[in-house]
Image 1 (cartoon, rainbow, N blue to C red):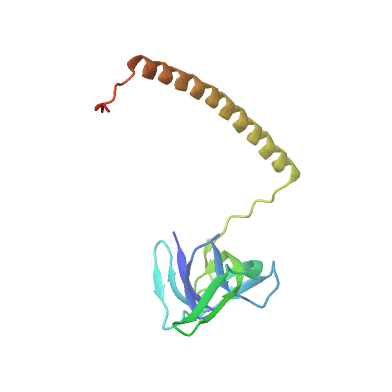
Image 2 (image 1 turned 90 degrees about the vertical axis):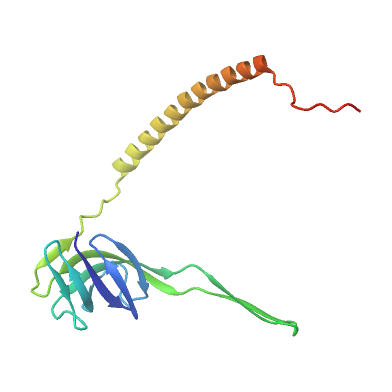
Length: 169
């Protein structure tokens, strides 16, 4: 399995083909292809290349899936004994990126992502049919579970356990 270590937004990421990353917001529009040229480390099945600090000529291609905001981080500041409190939140802008290709310093393709599946109406219909099959299987399973529960109740009623200790008042 081949991978690369890239640097973007002041952070380093270990990436492989068809992986989806959350990176600092990129200025390109959604659906655009971008190149990360700050490749610090490359690992193929046979060879390993280490940059000093970068590998010249190596690059990683990716497509931007979505520009959005990350989860809310709550910030709460309190000064004790001063009756002073401040609460606010922050949502960091991020870009969701899917890694498509990894190239070595010679321009040779090391890894490529498999094509993404496109959801069509036929696939949705097939999925609904599969959901119906699953519901039917669950119904039959629940009916058999009811039979098991009844047999357990019968056994328990026959055994009628007496309490270990009895208190007389």
